[in-house]
Length: 520
Ligand code: NOJ
Ligand code: CA
Image (cartoon, rainbow, N blue to C red):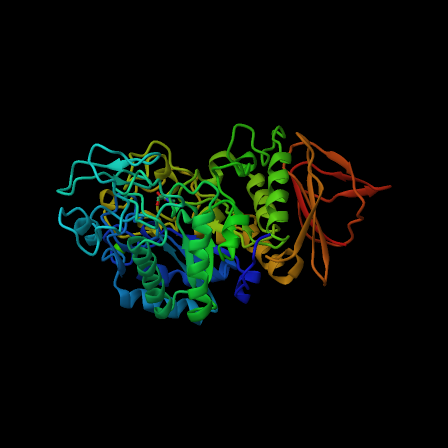
């Protein structure tokens, strides 16, 4: 069983907004979003109802992977502002009773990081063992890509993601005794890397960050298929946090909540890769949230229950509306089904994460040339559309200087137009968040029990409950009426879209394109 760490209380009703800093709001007209721009939009986020923020990496970087290739963990990238600016961001967030998680990238750096440059030198130095190097250029680290032929040092350096992201050394779970370069997790090099990671965390937490979303959290210890070494590493970090920053919140990009929670994370993401079946709902040929009604929710539910049981039936699995790595929700889900999808996302346990612009139904911008290692992800990272001014209010820069080209679809949404339209997706999401915030059973820690989730069938029905209330959620994205037998008799609807359900002798009949939350 997972060893669940005490949660910072604010996570109980946290609703997160993910900010991609380069695409959110440009305050100085250079075409790239920045921290002052974010500060100017905090009231917008608060007004939507979100009380927490995850901000993607904002540290110094050559931006070969949009900032997931850090060259200095202790400095804000000049294009976003200064360390003083981010300190002010923390203060402004806290003034509004909100919290902010930074994005911690512990597994790899940029090739331009000074530690890596030192580690490339032939003579031994403090950083020689900071990365995973073989001890001959002719030997590649098995099972990992590598960088070779660019250093005086005779060796190949393992990479974690792109070929310019060398893997930091946290050791191997079971080093092969015939391969001396595979260091153990308690070798001096691995220990020094871990201590440096704690220094980085300490630096930002002291300044006012409320915690971290951790990039590729499950990948630190090498050749660690079952994750045992990596879990132990995070338990060590947990001890440090418990001692120095017990209120810091930790959310992992891991996708295996039983492991990440054992490691002392508070919450884990349900991800678009691995066996989560998350994509069955939103991003596949026949998503469940489609009026065609040809999707299947059952495999997702099966996997969800498995994870839920393994994590002690606590609300610790976060289901995002999307993120900077996956297609925009609105690429495959249309019209009222976007509202229905949010009625699902905002009634599930764990903290919901709304990717900037998803509350407006922002488009995936097709056919863009890759920007900063985005490739197919670039279309989901286009600038936020604020209003009807130049560049939709994102930036005053000339068009050709914008970080990513704006969506130029004539019917693209903007925050301004959606705020003014009572029937907009924005107003629906706002309403859903405010109802969630008034009903504790719907929040992070309320229990969930699936009532109806059959193979290739609609609707989806589940019960959320805590010691104060029980709420039945019925979701039917399909364009046809459906009935199912249900042991619960819904009374008062606290939310509905698409009409109302009727109950007859334990059979509920659900209208087409419908979602409803009912107090029992
Ligand atoms: C996951 C991040 O979300 C993604 O954007 C990045 O490219 C990789 N990790 C590598 O850090
Ligand atoms: Ca700027």
